[in-house]
Amino acid sequence: MITVQEADHIISAQQWRHGMTVVPLLQAYGRVLAETIVADRDIPPYHRVAMDGIAIRWCDYDNGCRSFYISGTVGAGATTTAPPAENTCLEIMTGAALPPGTDTVIPYEQVIINNGIAEIKQNSVTKGQNIHTKGRDKKSGDLLIPSGTKIGPSEISVAAAVGKTQLLVVQHPRIAIFSSGNELVDVGATPLPYQIRRSNSYAIHTCLQEIGIHAEMGHLPDDLAMIKEMLQKAIEDFDVIVLSGGISMGKYDFIPQALAEISVKCLFHKVKQRPGKPIWFGTFGQNGVVFALPGNPVSTFLCLIRYTMPWLETAMKLPPKQVRFALLDGDWAFEPALQYFLPVRVKQDKMGTIWASPLKTNGSGDFASLLEGDGFLELPAEQSTFKKGDAFRIWLYR
Ligand code: AMP
Ligand code: MG
Image (cartoon, rainbow, N blue to C red; front, side, top):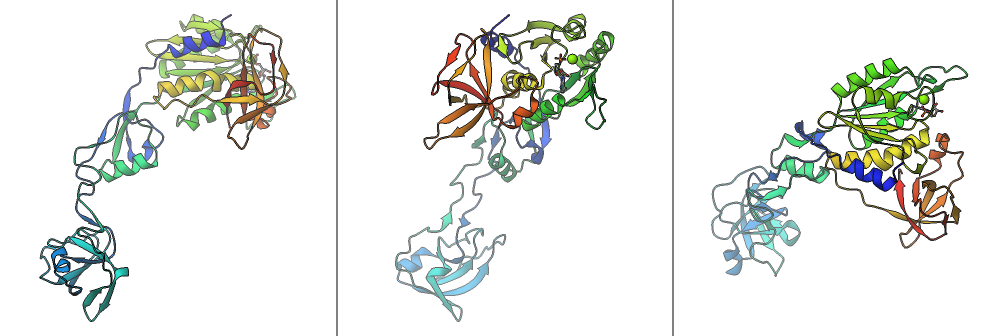
């Protein structure tokens, strides 16, 4: 049996050779940019007036003129060609292009307008004030957003400003999720007394949704021939397959055998950890990977957030999540030589330190306990006693 660290190495060595795809601008949110975005023209593209007020020729002001005859009004989106004559001004609005001949804008707050004359009340007018000059922020052709950036609202806004109606982004893997087991029924069904509703696939689906992936869901009965047939089809149609259940020591745990028989290569089966010891990982074809997670819901969930999600985030070129540590809020003991993922609730103290309080749960089948917790504290296998205040890596799901 391998260690958690060895499992990490094996999984992270499976690099995803992703493609690229073009999506409409608004659908690019949350994805990773696969092109560079450059300024299609100067930003701002013209001398943009930055205040509502009057536009004057600085030389008139400098020559002592304080009362300007208003020769017209220019709104945003309007153009003017004729420069104002000596000692005249134009009323001008924010967002308008600075009229030719003028070079200084005085806000309405600093003028008194009477009978078509604007009188300046302000003594300290500087040449060029209140003008956001052409190309001041960026020059035409400047790099605005490098390839590899995760697209958020500010990237969408800049892409829109430079006329990108669609963006080239990193392609998502096609993912299929399968639950397994004859005891499991649909969420909408009324289970018989010895049946339960399948919930794991929903947990997995939701975690994937959080990174923008919409996975397909299926269910495998405990029947070797059926499992082989369905998984054979899946490895033809999908890049990543996430399974839950059917990988332990039970008589009907056919999944490892089925995967081997359809030539999915096992890279490991079982990791020195609790929960989630039976986890199975393998590869198929050029680029495909299979995460077969144990069926107990807490094990499925832990293995998903501990192994599958980080691999997927890397595969999709998403920025790496911050590695976080928390201080154990109470003494703890765990004897077996297994990495223990302790369910915890967290709180942050005034200094920003995260404290993790152990939760009392009924083990890996106790899926309702996930509602009480915020994450799992990863306690190393080499240790069996853990002291209050010791720091450990934490895997938060909230
Ligand atoms: P297995 O790994 O198939 O032996 O399943 C271990 C336990 O997890 C059993 O009690 C199953 O009923 C339960 N289980 C497996 N898959 C699911 C699922 N999709 N949703 C809820 N419980 C499950
Ligand atoms: Mg089962």
